Image (cartoon, rainbow, N blue to C red; front, side):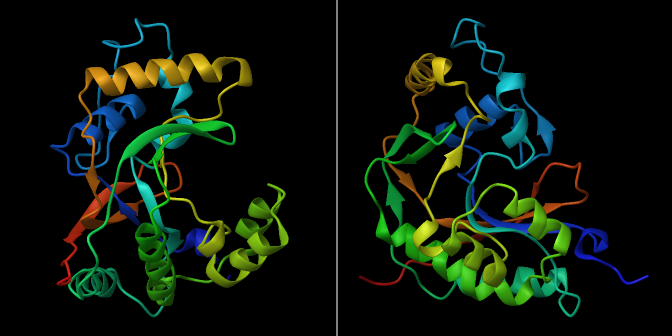
Length: 241
């Protein structure tokens, strides 16, 4: 029987993940209850919110992906490619020379979930994501009919379907928005209260006022049920201004 991508081993993704020593990462990973650097669970942040929020329930969906911003969405490796080649490509790309990427973090509702986003539109982050989408697509296995059907069930627009068929993911280029997911779906009547708790938490944790997007992280997911974990890290070489 011919293999489908679902049978084709682990999935990979290229993310921005803040360094583990940063307050942003400590805060985000504690909210999700998972540290993608170590692969370990971490305590939920009962020190803010007064225990009124069930973080385990609220963050169950994004927990498996770790605290991150997507630059190249999860994909199975193309049959002709190896993990070593993908790691090498990541490091080579990071070493090419890039603008200095940074953003002021803030919390916002995005559809039915809450995420960390740049306070202002940062074109350089969109350009970085677009470069990752195109360059690393050579390492992506074709999307399976099962995966396509699953994506189409979420009522994508025409342009999103075109992106899905060409790039394996609907939210790229003009559909892309840099964000770091903190919750699963939040009921409309709870959004304001959850946002207030998260704002208080960021203040208590002293999250940095400016975040440098200075690295690319290659993630690996062993099986569909497993969480993503950091496989490799490549610091972006900053091009002379």
